[in-house]
Length: 409
Ligand SMILES: [Zn+2]
Figure 1 (cartoon, rainbow, N blue to C red):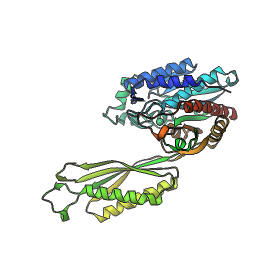
Figure 2: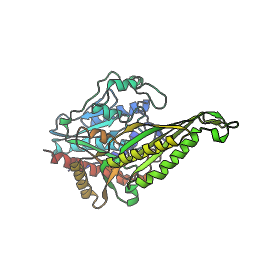
Figure 3: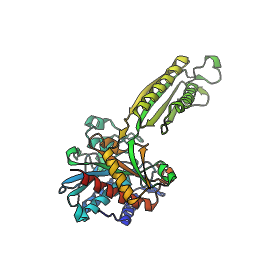
Figure 4: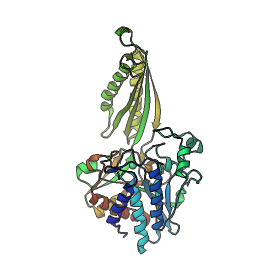
């Protein structure tokens, strides 16, 4: 059985966290100079592990094993959220590196190959899942032409050129090459932490549905316009938002979540009645039927608000990702490995965050394993996990990978 080196895993995670370190976390936006540096460092580490490694035209770092008879693709993303945590993404990449080293050093695993990927821009500094979407063949050259950085509007082409990746070919998946894709990640929620469990086996990655609601009224003077003749788009938006937050709990499942995370009013001035307002409404669930019910309810509420006047209210979908069930065979192997190394300390659970594994699952069997996040905190520099959990997770992950590879014929 491949035995991981826990201290080596922790040391490499700490080394990777030095690229863009911020307080106890990391600030490493995709294609920033430190991100590019960290990708070259990762490529060197994968080469040291004996993999045939390259960085491709979208910035994916891919390490290949040409001698194995069966191969498992293992990875995650390596950029971080702004002022984010040191483990989100990095954990799965360093676990992949450790598995490649461990399997290569174990004569009993000579025919079992670990290939490693550090995907680019899962976090969406330019567009979410750029790297895994490129690899699975659903990102066109035309889309790349159009994408711009969400902070400063830098064209993606320009960012790739500065990073030194622009002239490189983009690697495409050959699904026949792999028995599947395996990704480890911190849970980011608090389910494992609050229940005192140490390993999570992901059943499904949630679908995330996002909408833009726009409200148009009449911009006018905040003193001279009598209340009866106002068409205040700000009032209409706040009323509608309240209705949404009252109605959604009545149709929610046990783990449905919804967020109005962005609201704008124009012109946003103290003595002007807002003439235009918009907000983004998002909800997540693992059940496709519940997502449809939420959408129908949201459309009804928008329709009611529009008919009630005095403002015009319209809605358009921004994105609807499907819930993605993880492969049942891979789930069973991860669970078997967890029972071996952490008996009674594991559970099955959904992922409430999106992951590259959802993208890969369209092309090959995909599985995910979680380790606890202290206090359920993530997308923040204070994100952390106990070292014993990082080490235990690496061992369970290696055992799961071995079981998956041996079970494949
Ligand atoms: Zn992540």
